[in-house]
Length: 95
Image (cartoon, rainbow, N blue to C red):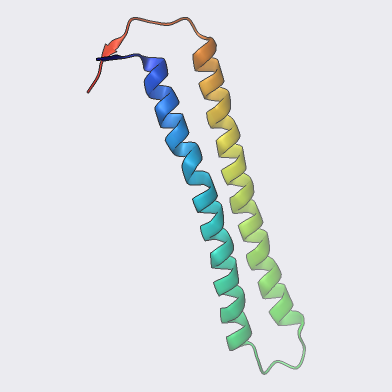
């Protein structure tokens, strides 16, 4: 069976996109654990501003990670679209 470059790219793109929800779920789970850890360590502080500041920083970091993940997915889709629009080259043997 002969696999074209476009077919290989489509398969690779699909696999990358399938990983994105897992990465986002892991990021959110990390934030949950981070908040639990901060809450367990900073329990005796009478002024809650320090705890909130630490948690806000963790949430902000996760926000950046999820944004980067979304941007990565958009770039994958754009690259795949460009590849599909390009003229087909000669097929390459399947591995």
